Length: 172
Image 1 (spheres, rainbow, N blue to C red):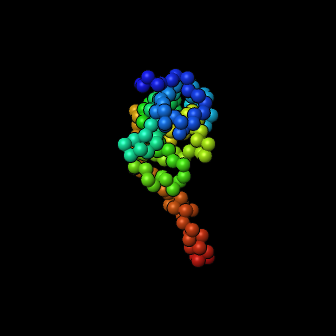
Image 2: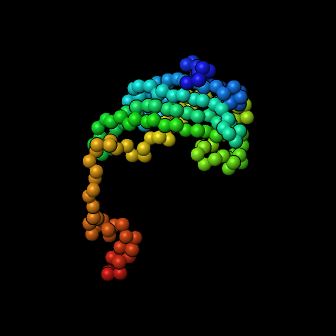
Image 3: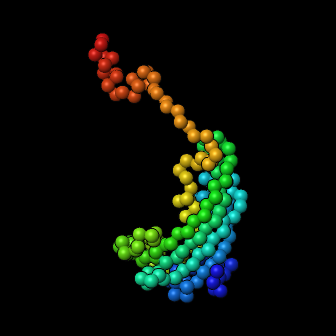
């Protein structure tokens, strides 16, 4: 951590001032405080630890870099048992003022459109990244793989076929 690290993270920060000052923040957010993420969790217990660092790269592009560590309690959709998904991620967000500037970012950057007032909410950035890290279908790593081939019955195939009704009328 840099000596400019601050454990008291403000609710909002001026992105451009933080880039100019090369500021770094370190904080914790309770999972229960993340209203958009909370519904995807089995129970909103625990904290998210993160670091948010602002700066410019060798190409003088402004960025915010997020380091996030969390343990997300999820329900396995195979076994319906609780499991913990460890999330460890680093995301470099290229700060842009206009969507047209997004194409100038290197491919390892994720674009972050900064509002005209320059204000960012660190807690929202962290929550957005955690939502993106969630699997579409949570399955515990030790869950048994389902490798069954389900063959539809003739009746199911007939119901799915839109021409089955016409074939029935043709026979009459």
